[in-house]
Length: 529
Ligand code: AMP
Ligand code: MG
Image (cartoon, rainbow, N blue to C red; front, side, top):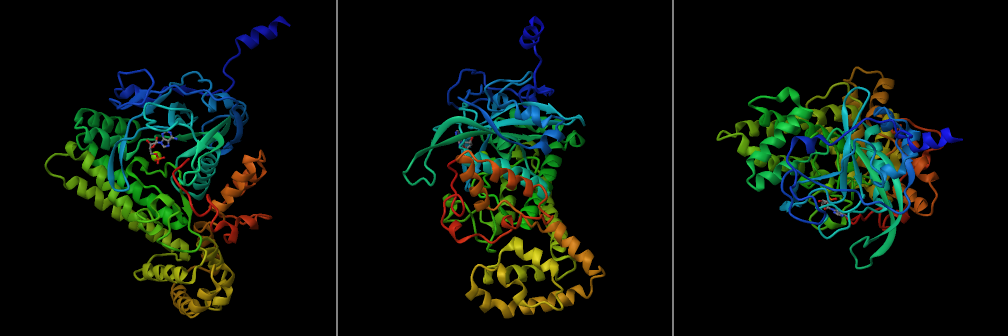
């Protein structure tokens, strides 16, 4: 059939998608050097061809993101070559972007996209553009001593949690595909001197922009005011056109601050711990970005961090996240200062905008968590006292708020939440304190106009039942490493509707099992991904 041969040779791109080259590469100067190799990169980006892998195989696709982008999930699943970096679709132009950052409080100089490669921008049906970025598609000029690859366990975690956070209503970057490479990557899981080969994978992430605070900090640190200004102009032009004008830098900063405040409040609402809030991991759009050694609060503890690299100082512990975000914003403010002039009050106003946005979001979300129609003076104290009790009694944060919603506080007793604790001795010791708290809560609800069903619905819309606990992710990883994707699919399906109780899903809404306490990947995570 000669017709078939012709159509095969000239067949059109199988994924019907309109891709534009990355606008950051059009708008801003790149490195004059185009050869590969690790180096100090001039300008905002460098060309970074992807390195093909042996045997790309699609493990998962987010149908939800695909549809938002106007793409057919099946066509995406059928193109592992594109989403592993083996083949560029028309319009794609691979680049790695240049940024610096403060890591654990110290300026680290140039970091850049060491294992992320920006492919281009997909135009969604609503006209908005989303950057597509591969993580793990090979080395770039920023890869320093590393290989630019990613292991299946960290890629699966990033893929699942990106989409779970979206379903939770938390601002986040997204994930379109998870593709196995058919190659192994050598990693020392806990930096314990025990490197071993692990299966590799590539995630394709999506976001309107992957711009970070560090993109502004690096030109500022290099004294390159021209590039700094051009970065601001580009960010404003592409994402905040309403701020174009002489005050663009200050207006941009205040908006970033507000968005960061809302993001931090969401993290506290759902019990998310980012784990590595370095300024290179802070998004200019106020999105949760760069999922690495993250975790979810189980036994309530504001001092907890899943990141073993930070176990001693606990800089990025759960309870410190709002303050860390503030510190990170002050680093961004310092970077933008050369564009603001002598009078730095606009930057101070931006810092204040962060505090106000965080507090407002905290109040709104706090009211929802407790099922209150309005947030009154004293309610923050009521919530904080509850958290103190949960910490003392070692109570599972996620399961507790769902149970609280189902109780009539005027009738309830500590026995109603007994099964939600991790330590019976502490629970018994703290039971009277909870009884006293329930009385205060019942008194407060007496002044709340909502009928009980409305209170419960409000609480269940703000307090998720299902979150991607590390041990749930680890179970999906263990199975996927053996070639079994059923656990990954079951977890993703449940996490699509985290606020809705789903039949047969109780094992995804359970206390952390004892085996997970000292299993790497469940309680102890490193950046080694
Ligand atoms: P992270 O801790 O993931 O935020 O990464 C900090 C810096 O290290 C960034 O510049 C990353 O691109 C780089 N990096 C992390 N892992 C790798 C890797 N496997 N290969 C190359 N660069 C990496
Ligand atoms: Mg990072």
